[in-house]
Image 1 (spheres, rainbow, N blue to C red):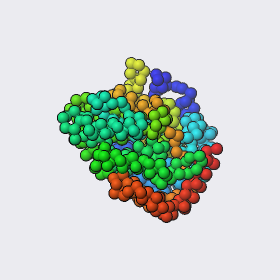
Image 2 (spheres, rainbow, N blue to C red; image 1 turned 120 degrees about the vertical axis):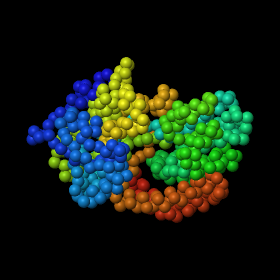
Image 3 (cartoon, helix red, strand yellow; image 1 turned 120 degrees about the horizontal axis):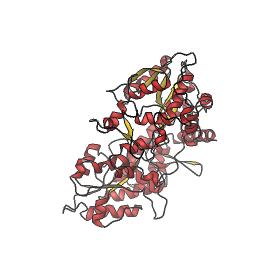
Length: 513
């Protein structure tokens, strides 16, 4: 790690063109349309990271910026005006869409000619490339690359397990037996065997974490990943027979009082209140976020309080544990070069530098001696300016320009440096360390017309599916009506949707060759 300091010279950065002036000898100024990570510190040329980029690359910036919501609203308006700044930050899908309409230039040739770092980390990585490439086969967007694939997973009160002499659950039967014991055997040790909530989660938002038990059946029922490819055939998971098996299990748990009666409406605030009142034995959530609960002051008031991540559940002991809930290699944010850009060469040097090892450190840690330092073992550590900031370290980092919503490479060391304790780090990386991920789902590639129709039909179907999944779990609709539910889904332009998905999947396979 010591060779990767902000001032180091290495092969990754030697080709990046740092400190090179424009070809006409003038210092170029690049206009940048970008959302600032926090509204109380909008980007300027004095923002630490951007100031350092300007110094290292001999360029100036002119920012068109605001908060994320504002800039998302402004993006289509700006594109419609035809008055494009040099660089535009936005979603990969948006940049691809507008790129195919001529707003952004294809970057395939510039990358091949003058961007060795982008070629290495994006073009030479099949998954990263296919997640980025547009329908026409061009790269218009340079994406942010994620460092941590871990997202959601089950967590259990390990101290409750220990009190009852139970092992960490692996199979769905293990989960049933554990939750039943939590309900019946005074797992929290307060003398009242009827006040525990064996399983609770947050249901009053887009993330329906309780759906994640479907991992045991090898399917994902969440709205963002309902199409599964199996033996080269497309399956819509909510109408698959395995979904019925999952629902039967959840309905049984619900009827026996093993699932929080209020799980469909639980908001984050009530969820936390139930957890810190020592009532919740197990949950499903973002693993890193929930593991940090162990270090909160509220947890210290509960003797022994400790949530521990569990492996994704399986149906039979010995089955391969693997979750479909994972972060993609590419984060949706990216940046592209507009068709009006007169400094493409300088912009490509900027884009490639940010993908270099030096650029990676700058965008994740900031400037050595200011926001980070090297520890005794050579590890990169944040300074007190970041770690002791009254608003928290993440916001402190956003204010100096790190983790900007542009195409850069997130760093595993960034995640580790921000862990509140070694235990949180261990849990956050446990799925990665133990390779507990299923193969990522394909990135479907649509024409504009197909994507518009896909969204229209999917919105209607998902609204119905979401409602019915909940009703089946709580018994408001009996599972004897599952076939009627499937027939209803198939009556909602499903055949048309299936055809769109097949075309999108075929295009994905073509582009991946």
